[in-house]
Amino acid sequence: IPDGPGYHEKYYFNPGDTGFKVWQTRYAKIGVGICWDQWFPECARSMALQGAEILFYPTAIGSEPHDKTISSRDHWQRVQQGHAGANLMPLIASNRIGNEEQDGYDITFYGSSFIANQFGEKVAELNETEEGVLVHSFDLDELEHIRSAWGTFRDRRPNLYGAVKTLDGSLES
Image: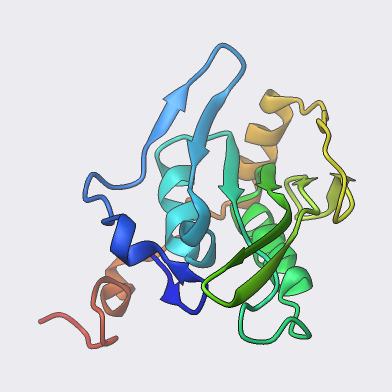
């Protein structure tokens, strides 16, 4: 949970401890990572390994409160596109629009909600100020075939990922 100028979320929220979940809907099995989760590839991979077929990331990201000239919009989108490509599954990133002023900070939210395909390519996108609904169709059976053919999950080596399970990157004994 971020905690910095303009983002005092640690004051209002506590991180959950139930792990990353997936849900079966009538359309697909979905994984949902919320806001700050988007910066951690382990979140997307965990949901993919649990059988998610589509990843969703609702968020509220915008200009840096302390310096509006700094834009992380493209970085934010590329990270999400990387989650889609690394897990060979579609990803839907929704972001708020508008401006918020509070405690002397001014944040302009990026908007730019988008859908990425299984290779991380954007297939639909709204602009920075546009409200709307994005729709794109995916053949889930074809996507499962692609994931299976690539062997991305088959060839994982979790026995080598011990450092990922620690906060300081040390290997577990």
